[in-house]
Amino acid sequence: MRGVDVSIFNENVDWRALKAAGIDFAICRTGYGKSGFDENFQHNVEEAHKAGLICGAYHYSYALTPSDAAAEAAFCKGIIERAGILLELPVWFSMSDADEYKKRHFFEFTRAHVTNICKAFLDNIKPLNCGVFANLSWLEEYIDWQSLGCEIWSAQWNTEDNFKGRMWQYTNALTIGGQTFNGNILYEAGEQAVLGQSTTTQAQAQPAAPQSTSSLIQNILAAHSKDEAPAAAPAQPATPKPQAANSPSAQINSILSNLKPKADATKAADAQPSADDKIRNILANARNKK
Image (cartoon, rainbow, N blue to C red; front, side, top):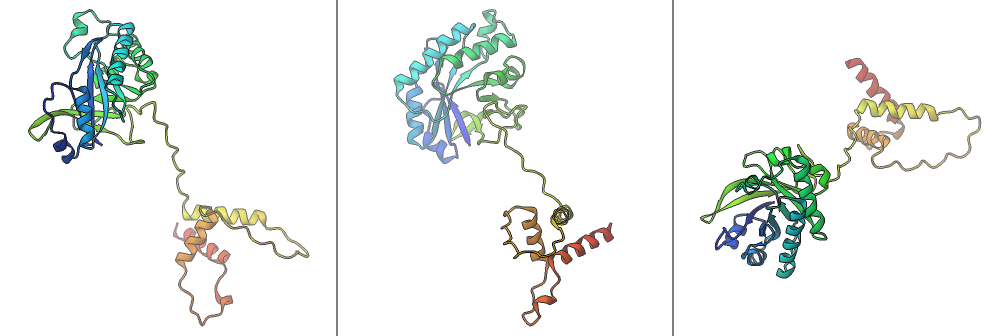
C-alpha cells in the first residue's frame, strides 16, 4: 500500500488528488514534544477519511530521558482522544534528531538510553497500538528494536529498502498535484523481511520440498513390501482406506493416470498392466537412463 505522512507544513492538501493518484493511507502528525500540538491533525484525519484513505498518526519526540518520553506519550494520547477520530493504523513514535535539539542538549546517544526512551513511550501510550519510526542509521546504531516488540517504520530515501519493517519512508519528494510529500510503502502481512523481520510478524512455516517422482515411487513400493505377508486362507478382502488427497500414493496414482493412454473401449480390462507393473517399469526406465 502507498501512503504519505503529513503535518501542518503540508498546507491545503488535496486529498482527492492523492486518492486518485493511488495513495491508500496517511500518517498524520499529532504534535511534538510534551506540548507542541499540530493544529491540522484532526482536520487531516477527517479529510483523508472522506477521500477514502485510512489513517495512522505520528508524534515527533524531543525526549531527553525516559520520563520525558512518558510525558510525551500522555500528551499524544490526549490529542487523539480529544479529536475523537478512528485510527486504522498505529501511532508512531518518531525518534530522530533532525534539528539537532538532542545534540544541543547533551543527549546520551547510546543504544541502551535511546531504546529505554522508546520503551517508555510505548508503555505509556497503551492501550493505543504504537510503533517506532526512525531512519535506518538510528535503527542500526541506537535502537534495539528487536527488544521493543513493536512494529517498525524505517526511513531510507532510496530505491531499495534495506530494513523492511512494517513501513518504509522511501522519499521526501513525492509530487502529486503540484504538492510534495514524504512517500511511504506499507507492507502487507508476511512481506516483512529484515535486515529485519518485524518482531510482531510470526514466521510462516515453510512447506517441505516436494519429493521427486522416483522418490515417491520408491516410498510407495517400500511401504507396499512391508505390508505384504503370505496368508493361507485370507478372509474377505478388507475395504481399502481412501487415500489422503496429498499423500504420496495419491500423487503417484495421479501421475500414472495422466501418463497412461486412454483405454480403447474394445480392449478387455485384463489386458491393461497393473499399477505395480507400471511403477516397476517407470523405475526400470529411470535406472536405465542414469
